[in-house]
Image (cartoon, rainbow, N blue to C red):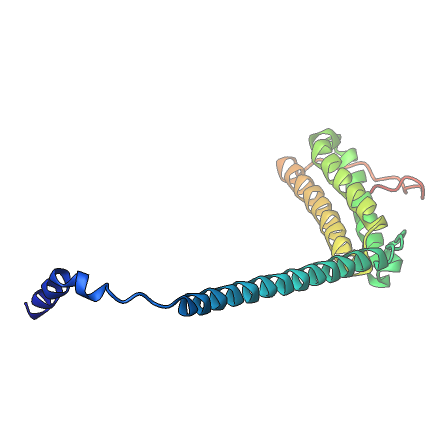
Length: 186
């Protein structure tokens, strides 16, 4: 309540408080101080703008320089370029696939898995294309995926052969002919 009485006193005697008018010199000082602050603020924004432009140009230059200086990936034609052990694994898988496929053909059941084998062959071809333009760090990962596809192909052929043998254990498959070197299955 004490505050309400004080506010009431100020409200009632407001005309008595408003009698003094500041001198023009005081208003001039206030205006000068405001202009000085405004000038400082404008100068600060100009400096910040120039700094932002310089940082932006440096960033664009660094990004463009990094892009232009990236070496062109060398083409990897064979798995030997990535690692000799990969080429040996690929050769072993291809030999095993060839043998199992010839066994499957002797059972006259090759058409049953042809679609799955075709999909795997297509993904192997895609991986080989990817390998052609892959940077050296990514090449090993692509080769591992390629070998996984070979493993999957062997697995499919083994499963089909096992199921056929379980269904008719008395059937003797025709002995596979020796494969010619150019009859290689992916």
